[in-house]
Length: 272
Ligand SMILES: O=C(O)C[C@@H](O)[C@H](O)C(=O)CO
Image (cartoon, rainbow, N blue to C red):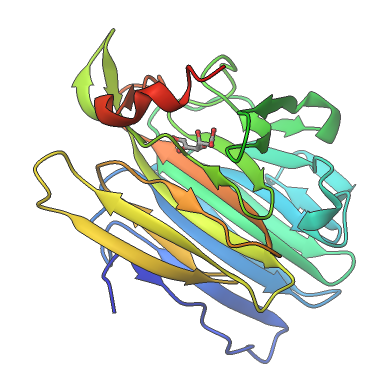
């Protein structure tokens, strides 16, 4: 199997916590982005000390109470399925803080980490704070919830966005990349994709390829899989009959999302 494709770990621990994904600097080819998906049974909890990482906790489904050791945000989370296609609540917690997440109902949370040395205030990012965008036309239509975009100074490094792609459509398309630290033309950001499909037996295809094709992998991605994008273009194609959801985490040396479209396919944007 591709080193860029991660399948979920379905082992539920005794305490009602299932760690579906745990992508770290130590177990991946990523230097900046770390990522977890955790399922919690109602009443279960997890604790972590954020030393040199900041974290954006996204309540994907269900309701959770999040604490940084001082502030407490109760009952956050807005949906039972991501496919309700409404924004959800998230909490940003900085490095050097404690993080506790307790499930008020059965819940699934995404923990989106990036390196951070500069403590910043904890912030509840309410569903209403998400910037909603509809992008694309023809078979390239997607709905975007910007949770932590680069225009929002809440974080030092991490960027978080969720994307819904309609059946038979494409997203992260035409192919774009952000793997050169060459602003103002392009920024260098690694990325993870956490995918879900509706109905859940669906699949999507994601290709990750660099300009020189030193990476060139096309993956069949199933429900709750993670795709790592250390560099390169990373388009997603969704088969007819299925809707795609993914959560992107990005981070790199500068907190700017400046992408470069692959020149051969840029004409797709300009069609009338
Ligand atoms: O617009 C889209 O199709 C989503 C992508 O921009 C996605 O968030 C991404 O690739 C970020 O680099």
